[in-house]
Structure formats: structure tokens, C-alpha cells
Image 1 (cartoon, rainbow, N blue to C red):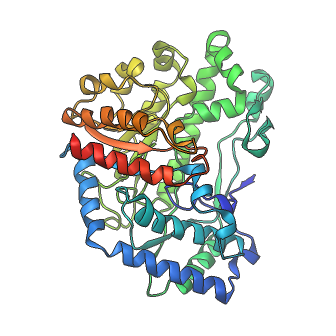
Image 2 (spheres, one colour):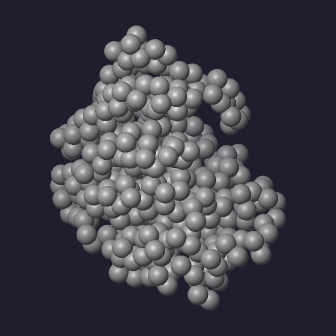
Length: 435
């Protein structure tokens, strides 16, 4: 059984705080920590009350509903946050207080420094505290120290021997601890921010990552040729496990709408008039939400193999959701004949490895083109503005024919110069104004 935990110094996700299982001493904040968090909460509330936030929310809604061609810009520097807000600048010492402090500081930083199109909302989201039993086999890596490369150790070495040990994950929610954390948040942010229980239960539902975590990348690639029947058996089990997880979350009222300021897919936010807004329904179902599938690991697999071994299971997952996103770092054009058949597809990732010239033909105004410029440009101490500008000029020019969002993510570093991120946004704004 695995317990969901987090390194409070490196909270790097735009979706907010991931679900975590707390230790008892993490619920004891000092008066200094509570004061610090309340102070930051007040600043977030001030920012959230500005008219520009409603204007941005309306832009995202029109954008996601395919009713505008005005490009939107968002940056989440991911590991680069460590350079924007170094861990040694945090004031809080208690682990969970540091997580909350980082979360609030990021909201302020987005508005005051990045100045992109992220909407700052007057909420403080608290995830459930829970454990996940996993797939029944131990997952291991070789290497990976200090953020370096690693190799996955096969958990399933022999299908006939090991496959019977794989089982569906089971989630166990600790209601007492979840409520204790909620009460702590209400105490800290009383009269400042609206505290909500909201858990991001997944990022991707694409399954090939889980397959490779169980079988290894080489094993997966060989299996497509040598043991195709087991590829289908394991993909089927993974798909059924995810569907059962979704049913469990739905039946127990654990889902929250991701149709507001939630990060959806591999870029962009969930605002839409085509699905119920947050708070509109007391019980949220997957049909009220954005879904997301991707298969970055099969970038070197033929479109036909994607269509045979992955797409059928992607479709089963996507059928549950009201709107869907596809893709992250993989190019989609070669497999578009399959991807376009995903039910209620709305957002498609156009990675740096995609031929953007094909976007007007393939996506046009029928889908959101979630364009991802190269993060490597921001990894140097001083960015090459001519190169960055040329790339952004090409992206913004597509807005004449496509519904475009420009997303900067996947940054491992900002080259030790956090100003690279805000300068990237400025150049994007300049190119949008020219287009």
C-alpha cells in the first residue's frame, strides 16, 4: 500500500496541492505560521477580487467553448519554481504549512511577476487524505538520484507467473484526518479565503505510463511484437482498474468539478459553459468533467499500433467524460485518424515535436490547439530572444485559423534566471498584439 505524500519544498503543479496523507504533527501550526499563511491568503484574496480575474475567466470560457480566436498564454515552469521561489525563502517550518505557503506564493507570483492569463481565485483547496493500494506489485527504479535518469525495474518479469498478482487499486479515504485538515484550513483562512475540499485524483488517464511502470519500456516495446495478447490483457486490466476507480470516486461523492480554474489536460484551464460550473451540482459525475488521455511513451510506435493497442482503451476512458483533452509531448498528427474519434474531444496538445503547420488543416476551429513551445529556450542563463520570438510569432500566427493557447511547461530549469519566464510571457504578449 502506498501513502500519498509530498516534498513541501518542491510543490510544482499548476493543479494545486496533490492529495496527501498527513502525519499527526503536520497538523500543529505555530502562531507565526498561521499569521504568515493568513497574510498571504489576504494578498491572494485581494488579487482574486480584481476585475481582471473575471475578465480572464470569461476569456477562458469563450476559448474553451470555441467562441474566440484570441490566443491565451499560460506558464507553469514546473521544476523552475525552485528558482522562482527557493525553498530557503519559505518562512514556515511545519511540512504542511510549507506546502500551503508555497501554494499561496505561487498564486501571487503568477499575478505579480508572470502576468499571464491564469485566473487567481479566492479559494483554498484542501485535498482528501487517502492511501492507494496500487496495482499489487512493487514498483522500483534503478538510478534516478538527484533528479537524474533512471531505469524501471520490471515488476512483471514473466506474464504467466506475475500477471495473476496484479490487481485493481483500492483507495481508502481517511475521513477523520481529511476533516481535521479542513478545520485547520478554516481556522487559518477564516474570513480570508473560501476553503474547499477538492482533490485532483489524476493527471492523465492514458495508461501506457502505468503499463511501462509495470513492465518496463523495453518490455512494453517487445511485447507489442512478441506478446500482443498480453498487451491487450494488461491494457484491459489497467483500463478496468481506472474505470472502477472513477466509479468509486463518483459513487462516494469524492469528485469535484474541474470546469473552473482547474488545470486540465497538459495545458489550459477548465472554464466552460458546456459543462456544469463548480458548485452548480452537489454530486459531480465524470460526465460533468474534463477527461484526459495521452500516450507519450508510444511516440515511436506506428499509428496502426497505437490504434490497435492503445486507442480502444483511451476511447473507453474518454467515453465517461463530458469533454476530453488528448496528448502531451507526443506528436498527434500521424495518429489523428484515431485521436479525432475520441468522444467529445475538445483540446489537443501540439507539442514542440509536432508540425504546427498542419494545425489549421487538422484542428481548425473545431478543437483547441494547445501549443507548447520548446522549454529548452528558457534553460539558458540569458534567453535568445530572437529564437523565442520567432517561435512565438509562428504560434500566434496560427490564431487566424485555429483556437490557440500557448503553454510553457516541462521546464527542468530556468537557467538560474527566473526572469526568463516572465520575459517569455512579455514576448508572447508582444507577438499576440502584432498578429
